[in-house]
Length: 283
Image 1 (cartoon, helix red, strand yellow):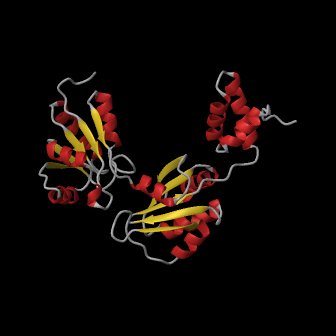
Image 2 (cartoon, rainbow, N blue to C red):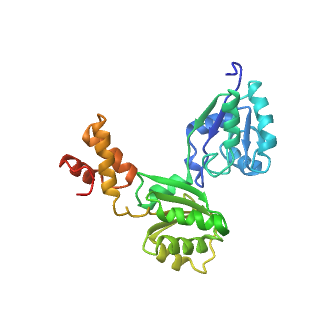
Image 3 (tube, helix red, strand yellow):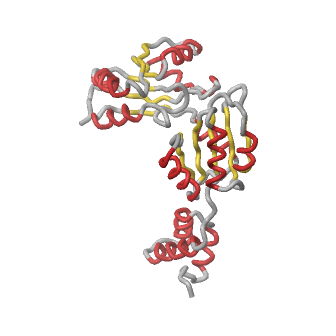
């Protein structure tokens, strides 16, 4: 059911540090909506003041999401447009917002997005590590079996991984990553992205862990870790997969690209084997 007279929930990306990153569309939307739902009313209030916008602010953070969702849904159903922002970046990406968006979708209330900065994507692209396949892990569990299992999974994953971490726990997390993934795995430490004291350090996990040991960090931290190298036999599996796709009617080059992406191996190597008539089976 779509609410014909409903307002629209607008999920708005806001700067992660540099105010100049706020888009023209975001400025306009924040000035037009009836309500701005935000993590910290004081922080968002300062942002709106600096761009010359006055708006009704309603707190919406992890601790009150369950109570706020019905209230915001009622406003939307009554015809009011609502903007959802966080303290920085895109709502729902390791920040509050998912529950409200899901509730609106379930209720048939329109949802739109005003794309903006994302610390995870910014860290990924500045890292210099592969961007064709990546996974966002958010914050790792702090301790125990859950942390060990997540680290073990990351060590096996062939995709580039993006993590968030508190500055206080960053040295320990780098040490744990080096122990699990190997000290030679490439990585990038990003701190205070887009801000005055931005710091981007690239190197191996072993080098970064050593350089951060005992250091007191401040600000927002993102860690980007290179994916695991392909395991032996992955190419053969990819060639078999490509052969199956080709047999089903796919063009060989496209079949090679698809199978290589799944296996995390070279598409050209898969295509060469496929074109030569090798199907990946052992002789």
